[in-house]
Length: 176
Length: 174
Image (cartoon, rainbow over all chains, first blue to last red; front, side):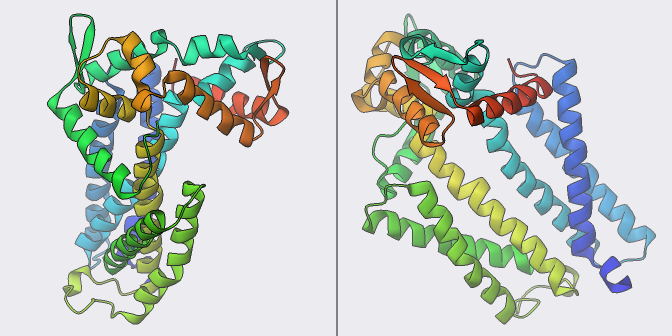
């Protein structure tokens, strides 16, 4: 058991899990207290801060316990946190942006939990919905506005080209 | 460290196998197919981890874990992250991402107004097609059902909505 307690990787994993839970709590507090415009940027900045503190924690634990493998312990904490974050982010975006989730919530807000399909389409397959999405994409510099028209930026074009290549590689068809 | 390197190698093998599968076979439920390939690759990952030396022949002692089980646990975390946070998300974005599809449509068709994009979305399929696809998914998962011209929540859809509403409140998503 004492050998297990001296495993640098295990210490790194446990520290990584601990700091990731702190990251989640800090994110909730941050979002509750401030009305952030660029939430993704805030989440990345918060994650980097927590990763830095996790590395510091593993270093302190290694030194106070005269443990070999401080680098391995720090590396393990970073891998653990990065892995948990890539699990978490798709989940966050489903809650935040998914049209399917918004459809369920819209239906639930009605007493009988039902709406005509045409009314749902007016909400989620309309020019108003699309304009809101395009405006967000302009804020993230993937699109630019020229008069009444939208056009793709260099950043957006690179993303489109990379994913277009992946779609061809996997024969996905147009999709969307 | 070894576990993460082996997980990366196993992830690359998984990507190659599923790419060959998607190109060679007419796969209808692609996400399910990808998960099956990932599951089938787990024995490959475990075998690679078991048969290779702790230092992989090149890692310094400072990066070699003395307790193999801890290294394997980190490897499993990394292998799962490579797939569920990497490969599967790439697929979801490429096949279902609305913003990505918009970017591709703008790239191929040039500048457009909002109303033009409503019709041109997904190489001319239009936004209604996109929403019909989402609706089909909700029906397949028994979250909603058609009730004549209306769409109604099923009991499981109502439960899911309660959970999502709570999560949105916690994360202050409006």
